[in-house]
Amino acid sequence: MPAMTPDVPSALSPLVRRIVAANPSHMTGPGTNTYLVGIDEVAVIDPGPDSKAHTDAIVGAAGRQRVRWIVLTHTHSDHAPGATRLAQVTGAEVLAFSTREKSVKVTRSIGDGDTIDGTEFRLAVLHAPGHAPNHLCFHLDEERMLFTGDTILGGMYSVVSPSTGGDMAQYFATLERLRKLRLRSIAPGHGELIDEPRARIDEYLQHRRAREKQILGLVRRGPCTVKSIVAALYADTPELLLPVAAKQIYSHLKKLRDEGRVTGRDQRSTWTAIS
Picture 1 (cartoon, rainbow, N blue to C red):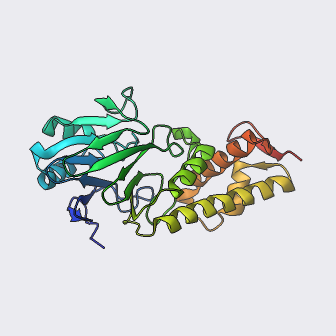
Picture 2 (cartoon, helix red, strand yellow):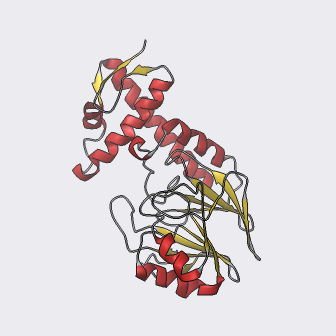
């Protein structure tokens, strides 16, 4: 596998290069992956945080005049802010799900079924809500590679947090949709390239279904709070990650409530099962 050294380009295929941003953390793993798709004309997928060093690395690898599109999987702070600086340097248009974004100026909105057509490639746009309502994935037709942003990650699981627009029911539906694609690889927003895409998507679905079953089992035994469920299911999890676990639990509870299987109001509520 190519190295994940920050701000050093690595070739993943004849059409794709990866540059990892220097923002490693417990949430971003090695850092945010920026992808350069194409050679003569380049689409930059997820320019990452606002960093001059990272922008310089992108421009150095792609060439200032060759960057035609800056494409956002979603507008969370570790994926999108670098678009402004990169657009100023290159003059490229910024493409995202909506032009009404507060964190970055989007030139043109794109959605499900749209394409980005370069001289050497075509990126097909898939609306992929779940992690965020404005989340997009991009399928590189020539290589059957799927750029998944934070929908599927390498080496860790995606966070589906209602506080940032996450929706667990939509997330399940998105995973089921992606599972039907004929893929050779997945290029995630964080972590290494995934060369067994079907197996990884199945792993994600199995993990989320198992977690939902555990949560429902606890609530059926008696009234629960998000805090008590986290304590029962994440006893060995580092304290730093417990707030993230709580958001995941709450997202599952909201899905179960919408399905008529539990009752509860919010993350501070007591939740009970519906018999």
